[in-house]
Length: 120
Image (tube, rainbow, N blue to C red; front, top):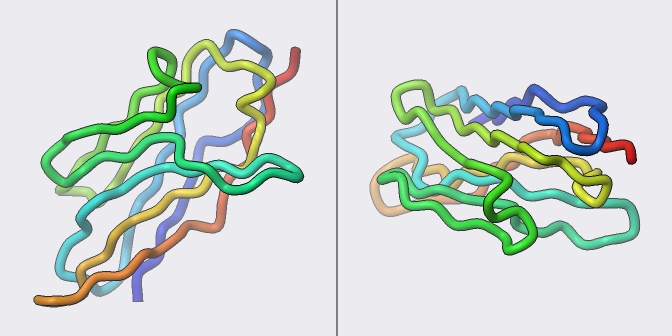
């Protein structure tokens, strides 16, 4: 079983920065795509950014130019650098990984979530 553990959330003023990290541990062959989602109160969970194992990235329009997703395959870790934060970025941020436990199969694994609060 795979565990994804997030860290780095917190409270910051508008215009500030935070860096989230998510490390995968457990038994698996590899992790393909990794990414970050967020869910604000009363809203659906939405994709923030994701990155393939080869480094190709994808961002929500609302964070383009402000957030950067990266990963370290050797450490099975994905990062989210968040700059120029806005109050509307306030949400619980979840890490996601497409886990490959063995040849021919894969499944989604989720972290427990980390709160990001941006004050105006």
